[in-house]
Image (cartoon, rainbow, N blue to C red; front, side, top):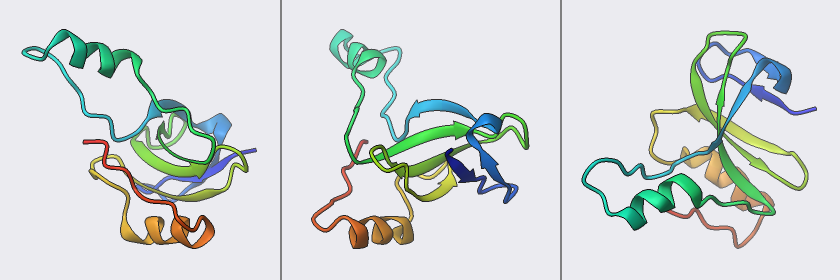
Length: 109
């Protein structure tokens, strides 16, 4: 079972208390963008084997959205952080780098 800590209320919640929201750190395109940019935003998503950054909502708690960094193969959670941040905090990136040498943060913006 996946257990994530809500960075807002501090509750360690099982995945049954949470709602997944897909990939985190996407650059959103809307009015005024090209058809290719908008199509990419709607349909092109990462599906990595390894470290992945996701959006989650504490649905049965405070109701707020947050981001989580986890490994898709081992379900290891590296940390959670508020959804307003544009990239993962340094401590989370350091945890990932310590466990996965050679891993680099990819700028999604």
